[in-house]
Length: 307
View 1 (tube, rainbow, N blue to C red):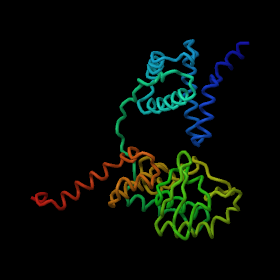
View 2 (tube, one colour; view 1 turned 120 degrees about the vertical axis):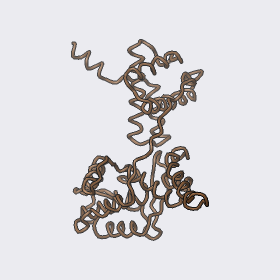
View 3 (spheres, one colour; view 1 turned 120 degrees about the horizontal axis):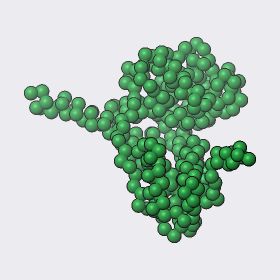
View 4 (cartoon, one colour; view 1 turned 90 degrees about the vertical axis):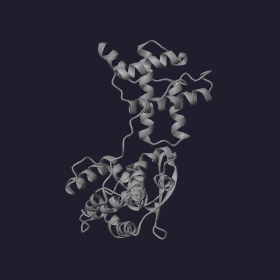
């Protein structure tokens, strides 16, 4: 009997309002599996707290929410995680208001914690060149890896965008990639001639050797799609071989893409479009690059800089 009670406590609490909201964001917003899992976990945490305190979701008040946030802080939730958590709750409350489940938003007074500005980790051009030169292109795995690395850097792709890309998403005539980003938003990204050449050779000569079982662009040894974890391991392996001591990930290639564009003179709005950011504020983490470039230009050309 005690075992049955323990099993019940281990089962995440559920509520038909939350189920309705998750179904809505899955169908209407086209969220990725990872995003949906995050929303679900955040709302399950709220439900567990309410159940523990004998509160009902239907009777949620501002006071109860403040108690919940105090509880999260006491558990050691940091500002960035707390901000993401609040974003999940706000989305649910907005949907609940539309459904008229609440007469007013119980979370309208909640404010996001101030987040420290963290500059993105990126590779220098010399470091990137070292990594891109490493794959053994005489082998099919090496050729695949070179095409993947070139594409990550040439198009600033998220790892999810890379592994979900299909063969027909690349137009060899125009050199354009069709990319499906967050929320299934589509964008077109041009890639440079080096990446075009590597990708075309991979698709024509190497990919068929994997005996494709799916139409994903990049495949594993069994001819099936790659996983996020698989790409992470590859990146780490090549970073180690290149002698890069700090930790890098597929997202480091995306940050390097944006950073090097801005260093070369691209404007922030263009980089926003290429990265697929819906809001310019998401791209503004790269403004330190423009500031550095402006300082360099000022020092180089201002008459009094050399005095």
